[in-house]
Image (cartoon, rainbow, N blue to C red; front, side, top):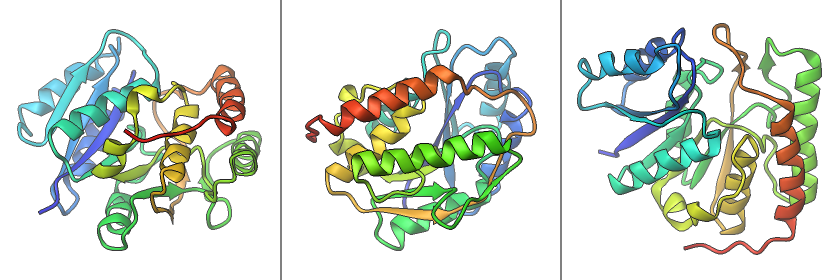
Length: 240
């Protein structure tokens, strides 16, 4: 049976974390979760610890001192999952903007249809975003168009954070050489996988903005991504 783990980074997600964990564990197919918890002052980590006694073989947590960025959280989770030989490694938000019921669809795109990286895509089938202000939808959509044009990558949702990797992709990417820390990290990981020749597919999803808790988005994140994409275009990418 394939070993599957979902990485969920958290910072102040007390309203969502227990519900998302239980929703994942209700899925068929024996998924595990590793929470990368960045010292949330709201007690998110304590909630996860209490659930770990209920799910001792499926729920794990790495606690870090303070906010260190989305990219470093995922890389910490990737290395943990690679060491433990998980076959399929997922990225997912804690806030239900990614529907846990779509997880098996991403898994089947890889395990059943031969993809190396499956992306839960908001834009491969029109625009499928609910509850975002129109300005944010436009900014996100055209950010993906910009990335696609600059990098020549045939991916519609270049900033998507809902993904399933085969382990070999993450073993091949030099994770210590991934430079972007915010949402630009999502672009850099996709582009690196693309340049290394891995098969990438997009699975259409409906993205629903969080109902509880607060967004971690900032203008600095967009600035990092813009200039990072320009630099990426002229960088040589090699696997490990």
